[in-house]
Length: 612
Image (cartoon, rainbow, N blue to C red):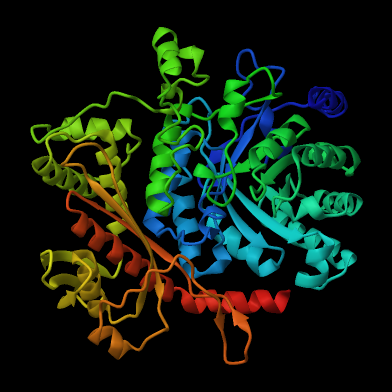
């Protein structure tokens, strides 16, 4: 049914491209030369795909993904993820929300400047990754966004406004006419700054279709080049979402001038199905995230596996999917469930005897995707303490770390040598864990130096921790006594050093690889604790409450307010006590970093409320 509907759309719209000349974008300095953006999906017609459209992969892991509870990225982590996404072949990356804080602005600007021009791994695509930023439908937001993304050779302003009646009436408190005016005004201003402008109609899945056509028609007139149709609350079914895309394309004035985009959330588990339905009905851009953080699922391998079932092709370098997934999982603190499609550890394992017998005889009996197609290899190149710098550098480049500067490489090599002395074989999983640990620990107020723990089965546990406060260049040492084991004692000592009330929300430990000498990886989640005083924290450092959820807080006026922010941290070491200490300090550094941006963030939130 979808294929039939799509053929009707192609006969109406696609034929309009026939007599138009298509030129590749010319990159000059840090500005893009204007070109008909609605034709960009025809740039990369490869052999055998003349009848297919290029599917634009828009990754929003760094913006929407960071909205997931407990997910916070440092600037260095965002840069590392952005480099991997560029190498992966992503067409557009939404680097962040520049108006949110100075920290967010700096991250987007650095990604635009440092990652925007990169061409490594993109030779066949022929152009660098486009850097986008998100902005509300206000001139101040749009201008701030442009200031950040304009440093990239190819850049985009992505502005949005809700269109459903429930949002207009209860959140924005504006009429439909005001919604149209505000959306068109924001797009027009963005167009005056940037050639590439995307508009998203928030909560499209619950919006009136005819009103949506009015809004989208006006923003096309104002200069929008991409229209994104978000199913913000994951409400629609595949049939409904596909029909919505088709209806909007057929009834929106000027629909042939723009690229239509999907943005599907997974509240009812239908994000992938809805996105594929949108593609079948005319969408040529998909907004996705790595590992589905931000409640979205990837669709690339569906198209890769069924090349004849969809009217599009992609230019993603699929063998890099697994290692990119591993990096994002490590830096976000969100462990990929073992049974997750494509990137879960069980995705290519077979335990059933019948399955094993079939796979041994012919892999395609039970495998529709080869593990190597997404970068999963059963045999790793194993390094050891006798491995030299060239072998180590070569392996890092194969794992996607191709542009490390000499200082970072030397630090990584020293970490590798220390690990090789502690364990006999260093695998790819070990290397990925080491590098992600180095990226995360590269910046922060506190630098963990050493810990010392005395523990027994019945005796009280004592722990001493030494750290450097980099903001004051001061050495800090503290000791603590614990009744519940060495890890809690270490956490107590660290808590005394930072003079902060900390609540431990979650603690996870797992082995990175196999064997008694395997690296241990620890992930923690923390928040500030208001339940006891600072003096009590110093006198009773063991009071580290483990709670699976942060409960709502009632303010002085009796109103419920959101609980404090959650910060994750991760650390790796052959000693899980040391790995736990690294993870705890990593989370605390994120907490302190957030406070640096608190003033600008608070003023931004106050302005947002005023605008609404």
